Amino acid sequence: RRVVPEGDPFGATFGVLCTGFCAWARGREPWLTCLDAAAPKYGDTLVADVRQLVACVTLMVPAPIFWSLFDQQSSRWTFQVCYSSAEA
Image (cartoon, rainbow, N blue to C red):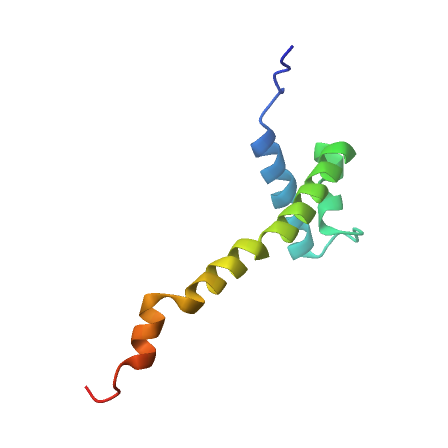
């Protein structure tokens, strides 16, 4: 049986991030972390889920950047630049 989510999960996630970072940027509330500022509005469960999502994204983002730069290491244009003459 398929369970349809209630509300907008992407909007709620974006709302937690925006609320947390705006409160952190203002610096008015003495929160433990910036995402804790969104707990009164969105609830502790959603804030904990967004915190786990941020941890996963932080872990996964460097991998494609590394492999895209590593793949350019032996491409044709790199060889062409190395073997071309500097006198044009």
